[in-house]
Image 1 (cartoon, rainbow, N blue to C red):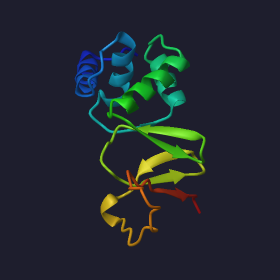
Image 2 (image 1 turned 180 degrees about the horizontal axis):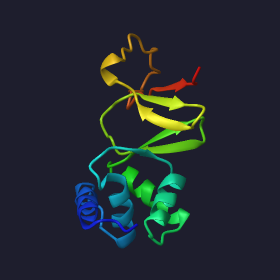
Image 3 (image 1 turned 30 degrees about the horizontal axis):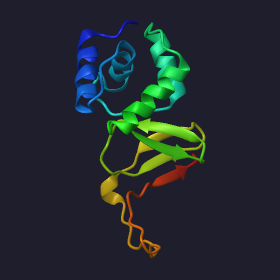
Image 4 (image 1 turned 120 degrees about the horizontal axis):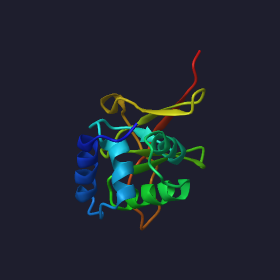
Length: 140
C-alpha cells in the first residue's frame, strides 16, 4: 500500500508548519500521521509498522528520532504512560486522555468535561508549564 500524493502533500505542509526540512523519511512518516487530516496517537512501534505496511524503508531508530524532531518542532506532543510507554499525539491543544489498560490504547477525553479545582502550591521560583491528565481505564 503506497502513500497517496494527497497524503504526502498534507504531510509536507505539516512539516513546513514546524519549520522542518521535508526529507523523504520525514515526509513519509508525516503523511502516515496527518495525511488523512485526522489526529492520532501512535507509538514509535505502531508508526514503524504502518511505515512498513506502506512499503516505506525506515528503521525503528529513524522513527524514534523523527518523532523526537516532531516534538521539538512543536507539531507533536509526547504523552508518557507508566513512566516508560510513550505515545505521540498530533493534536496540540491542551486536552486530557483516556488510557485503556486492557488494549494499551490512548484516546482523547472530552476536555470540556474536565475541571481541575485546585493545584498544590508551587515551590518558590517555579511556574506551571503544563498539566497532563491521563485517566486510566479498564473494561468491566
